[in-house]
Length: 263
Length: 263
Image 1 (cartoon, rainbow over the protein chains, first blue to last red):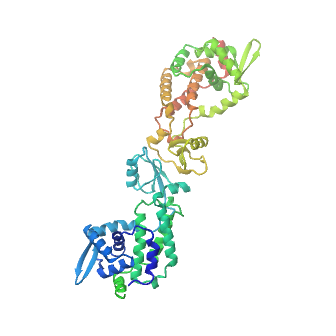
Image 2: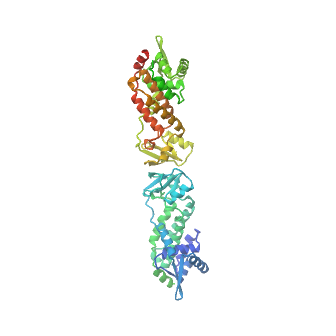
Image 3: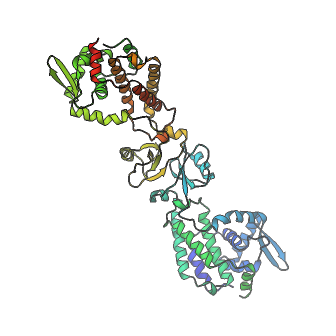
């Protein structure tokens, strides 16, 4: 059973919205049970979801949906259901993980500017697919090593002024990143040391952090480090997410199950 | 008196237009009499202008205008008028000369791209004044050493694709440069060796070359060499102008006067 700390954690991050139950469950399995053969027992899952403020009915609906979508599978072991990612669910989780769990970027990472002869949606799509993000009309930034599409002019990036760094930021997510940063800062200030939390608490805490982080970070391409503004809220979220996930390492499923049974 | 070759020279370049007499005279004095104390005797000037197909009446009107404008001054020496640049005319000629007589650019000259936060006419004016030419929306090219205005991002130029080089060319002068190139090529093919021309012929020839070249080259800023397309008509004109002026070096005023008296 979750300790008394769990409600505070949930409260700190619950105000951010986007907590659709099936999506929370995707975050949970991605963080806790991405390994081949990993499964979460029904009662443990129920306790985690309850700690996440999810009612049992909503929990059942989400499980049903994710099974229908081919993301989760459930097998009976005696009187207990064991839930796990399908091969597809595992593949998709694995594809997103490098971005979600990436260490914060090196702000000295070399970048380059690729100039295109023409602008428009088609050019932008081509450039995005090649790993470049638009920062100027017909100008796209990418990491130094990446080869841009044929016909581009390619200039090595230098120390960039603030306005150019801002141009590389996903402006549509600015408010969301600011809100997440505030929530994470509140969370960090309120959280007890790791030893004071049960494995179940940590699973809940990590699920909420990963979930709220991936909702934003997967919506935009990563800017090359050399173009990132040190006080951009998205970068500061990244630093905090990285620090918090390191401070509260992933417990094993056995530890979570034991903590759950102890309740 | 000019030799038989002069009419061919005049014909080759006369079709280009822009042969206003006072402007031709500015070119002539700039090329032949820019030095302190340099003066062209009235009869010599008349012969040169006649060789340039200018009627005596038009010659007098142009002289009158340039004196009124403070560009030329005339003094009587016995029965002969001596015409020379005023200090102002000499200053203006000297200011334009570096560009007119510049050797062709080194196509390996390093360049840089300066990116501006905002676009518009004001930005463009500021950037042009700083020695940069627009090649992209909010993107300006300049020689590597030049410091751009505050707030610009500055990237070292690299091997540029054709479309970017074209963007640095003065497209409004494309037809004029093409016409000048054809005229210069015709001229080069038709011209006799220097030894076959009188000093007066050479003065006429140089005046026509300098005049038609400066009419175009002074209308646009020089692009950094590293951005110049080797087959751009403006660059090929520059090569030919440079070669022709070297092949037919400037005669002294005394040589021109002697050739004129010999007629």
